[in-house]
Length: 195
Image (cartoon, rainbow, N blue to C red; front, side, top):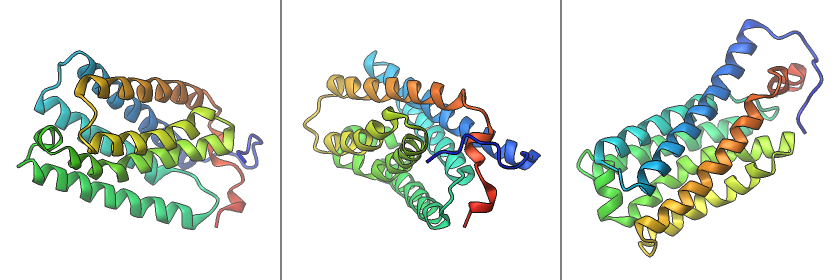
């Protein structure tokens, strides 16, 4: 469970890593909110979708590389998943001829390439849910990959897809607000327990 006790004084590096971690979560949330808004209002363009996808990938990466986990093997696994998600996003751009939006709109199965990225964000949400009882984190961890799989079937019309993304965005906003308001030392815990 999450540690709320201040075990050791935080170093400048500790503070910086927590700020980067939380900034990554916040930036990921902003990217998803912007995507939901654009999709709902039919304001999606290739440039905006491509930009939001790259922004989401980078912001998730910031959180992945600055997350604090007591079990080192979990962090290694999460990093591997992130490397895989980066490769999958690059493949998405290749499939679309340099345009991920094109791949997603003409080849719905291309959404499967977003499962690793949603898995990374879902892992972060689930970790926070486990540590700090943020129920929305568990919901996000399950719903984001399932939503991506549903989109890959091509059976979900674009307007209906916007409702799912709005639900994800709303949960991410709640999750982010609850997470970033916590004291910084909550994310560090007992440094002597890291392995």
